[in-house]
Length: 95
Image (cartoon, rainbow, N blue to C red; front, side):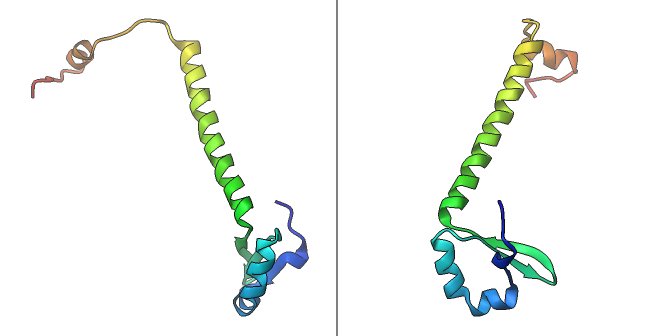
């Protein structure tokens, strides 16, 4: 996200001018609210928030895909029954 320094506002200004800032954000402008010279929050249009949410979902999908591909690449085809695994670890499944 590219932010112009003109889009950085103090928390005081953001609170005082929230109506104007939220209206401009609705039109596509992004604001970064600064408190004690540190960026703390961003006020973004809903469309950008939805886009970021979608990117998060896609990132999760990619992570799952990479795990599936790694498993496919290392699978030796040998399968073990639950009973055999439980016996190996000394677990009684009837308990």
